[in-house]
Amino acid sequence: RCVTIADTWGGVTDRGVCAVARHCPELERLDVGNTYVSDHGIASVAARCARLRFLNVAGTQGSVSDASVADMGRRCPLLEHLSVSNTRGKVTSVGVSIVAQHCPRLEHLDVSGTEGRITDAAIVEVATRCPLLQRLAVRATRGAITDVSVESVARRCPQLRFLDVSDTEKQVTD
Image (cartoon, rainbow, N blue to C red; front, side, top):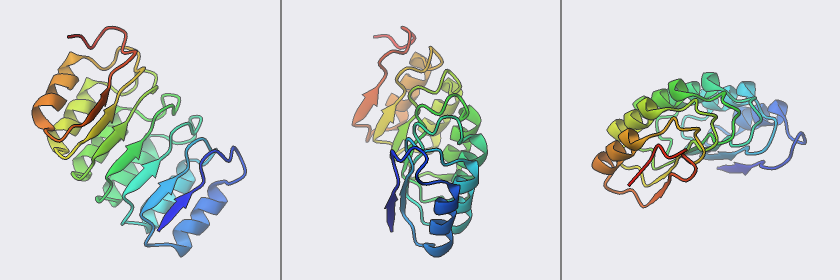
């Protein structure tokens, strides 16, 4: 039910991830952080593994985008953990908002280092639709995250235990 392929840098590709999706429909956890797995592999998992609860695509060098993240949101409503950090701006507010709309059980979201492509609008959407949120990292978002979204999270997510707003270019204040 769990596959960790992280940090392989080319050793595992979409071909391997698609094979896992085909043969492991009960998959609940997929970690492909710091790999070259792309939208094709993630879309395959979304299409076949509806019980997925954990997805890490951090550091996928821009090969994972809104297309597959949104698909994951629509097809995997049990998703609780999503990390899209350091995806070279390919995952934006659009993808994160779709995840928020379809995955009310989301507890952990990391959008750090997304080159300013994830904004207050998406984080407010997460706060509004995902009240179970416990961990949120919006570090190094080039000023796109401000007090507006942090205040929304504070008001709507009473279970929040961890919040990383470091390096938000002074857009998050006291």
